Length: 284
Image 1: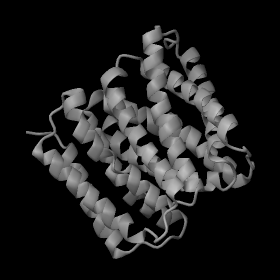
Image 2: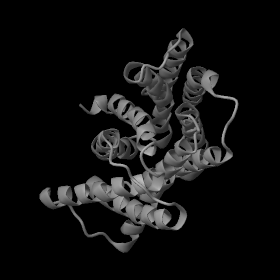
Image 3: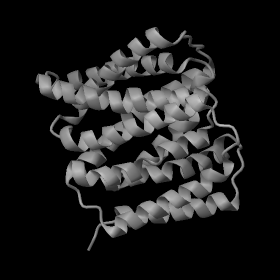
Image 4: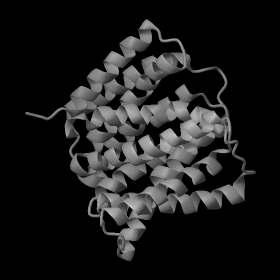
């Protein structure tokens, strides 16, 4: 089952881009995320209670989990949701945040003392080229500056969260870490909501279904898998999986939203998959 975690993570993470578009059409971005992580916090709290997981943390562990949670859930997702709400296309947003493996590989050496081999760099380059091939040709002529800035903030945040999770987050039990990460994100997002946006949520069928999917399968599923992969592998290898997210998002949009998929998209997906395989396979 553990061997399927990378594939399952890619599918679930890619689905978040599809459902995020539906969510921001019926709500302001930070109000939607506040609702999401309020419910996610409650879910993880109940899980910790019924599974007898450790809940009380030292102040230092609480602080570490909170910082990582704000990076992953508040700043990264806030950047993505806000960028899409500002009419930055889902494809453009995906390609910007998919630069994360490059930044992670660059900083994994000095920050985590990880050795990034030439084979991993070759895989990273191939993965990025494949992703560009899929998404790059579809980028429109006009890019909203606010959306671009928001997506760049999201890129920096998820890179920081990945490095910090590997550096300081591995000693905290996974369920407990998820609880405090989600709760800290909820508090942070509530503050942002009241300070910076005129909030509204339209509880349409599309919003309820999309939000339910993100809570159950992305927050409870994908984020937990991501932390497990980071804790048990290297940050640079795990981050390379993100190169497959934009191509898989294109395939999912073709299947579920009737968006077009060209032969160039298929070639890009193959190249990105080859790059991820080279970067993440075990060295002999």
